[in-house]
Every structure is written in C-alpha cells, then in structure tokens.
Length: 175
Image 1: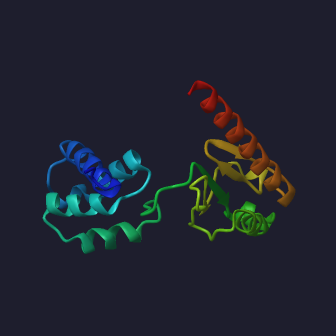
Image 2: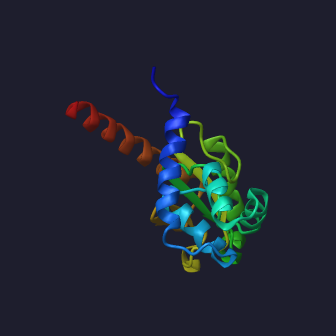
C-alpha cells in the first residue's frame, strides 16, 4: 500500500526544514530570517514549516503565525507559476493602477492575493516596482510591463497561454 501524497509531501517539507534550520541558532531573534529562508525555499510558508519552526524556537505556532501575518512579505499558500504583481504606488495609482488590478482580477477570476485553481497565476498588489516613469506597471514573474492598459492584460495572458502550449508540446514530444 502506498502512502498518501500529503504524507509524502509533509515528509519532504519536514526534511527540507530540518536542513534549513541547521543554519540558525534556536533563538527567537532568528524568527524573521528563518521565515524568509522558508519562503525563499518553498515560495510560501507551509503549515508543517510553522510547526517545525515553533518546535525549534520553543514558541507556539500561533505566535509565529502572528508575526508572519504582520508582515505582508509572507504568504501561506503556494504562489502561482506566473506571479502577477500590480503596482499601486502613487504614480501607478494616479495613472490607473486600480483599473489594471480590476482587469487582472476579472480576467483571472481571483481576488487580490489569490491563486488560480490551476496554480498558473497568482495576483498581488505591490507598493512600488521602481519604474514610476512607466506607470502603470505590472510585473509578471521577472518581466516588468510598463504603460499598462486593460488590453495589454489580454496580450500578456495570451503570451502565457502560447508559452504553456509550447511547453506542453515539447513535454509530450520528449515522452
């Protein structure tokens, strides 16, 4: 009989967390750096990581959750393959960043901070991307798109769909 997938995943996470925690002393001052390392490793903070970190630091998982939720850099759900960051800093907001955010929410059918069911896209608001002259700005993965408009959202989604089809085609040919 095989183990359920969740158990296997939890064991993988647990092993990775144990390896990661070896780089830290078990003092409470290391909580934020530990959470940052976990997020860098997994792209989010899994529940198992909260439990392991709590045991390591000898504090409650609830206390760790409280600290982690205070900072908007930490997330508790896996990110989308294509993480969409809509800038809503001053320049982007003035130039229609909120309209761009609404278009992404409508097109992806998710809320801000959400992930599509297929985990292809995640959507988040950011305070500044650092290229105000191109406002409004959206960052998809590592690519910054400036002078955004609702029609450009459609173009980006089409590019991602075409890339996925090409990836699937290449994957199927190698099998």
